[in-house]
Amino acid sequence: MTGAAEIIRQFRQAAGGPPRLYISGGPTESGLLRDTFAADPDLAEGITFVGIWLPGINRTDWTAFHPASRAESTFLGPDHRAAWEAGRLQVLPLHYSSACEWIARTPLDGAFLPVSAPDAQGSVSLGLATDLAPALVKRTDVPLVALIRPGMPAPPSAPKVPLARFDHVLEDPSPLITIADPPLTDDAAAIAAHVATLLADGFTVQSGIGSVQQIAMAALSHHRHMRVHTGMLTDAVLAPLRSGAISASPGTVLTGT
Image (tube, rainbow, N blue to C red; front, side, top):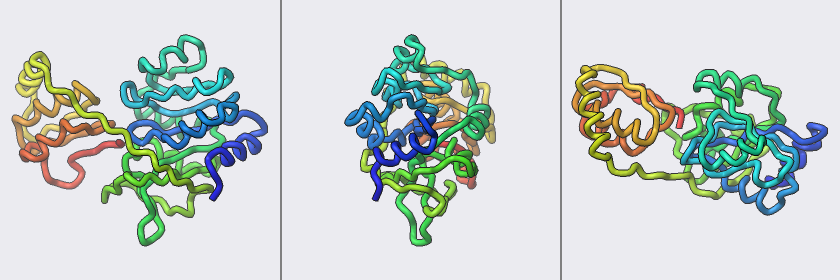
């Protein structure tokens, strides 16, 4: 099986110079790729890393491996601030739907997509990376690399892709990122109680991550037949699910990661 370093060299050769490579973020950030560049920093020379890396979750500064590398993303977290201040990171102020459109059209010379182990039919699930990966799978101009993650779940409603769709396949043994929600503070609990007065049974709630999602989930726990739309789920959603506040109907919880 071709290794990650060799695939990166192939992308560089095909591009005729430093390539633009998509690197997934969220809980599926690749430890294999991080370790590959750390072991051979020259591999990163001139590369533009493209992805949506979430503050507080994705700690890797991809531009730190080589001073000539660059990155493009839609978030600016504390772990990437030095790269932004140094001019190595370009931050695009896009909401998620626009970010998906950007990924669907921005020039790329390769994309590394985390997937589950293949099933009996030879298909892999996009699992916890269903936000941007579908837009890349639809592209015929970008070589795709499947990063098979041993811990990647395959939810029944998550998109599946034939493993044969990928140009390369790698085993990435690194664990998925897990972050526990901190306890809800007294101030956050008071905000949640107020938000609950603004909701009614059957409402759909959209939330972010961290304390925002904790507040939203605590608020909707006072109601029934609720629905949730969010870019990422955290442990805060478990309580309203178990209590029955969130409807058991299919599609009541929609998320990308």
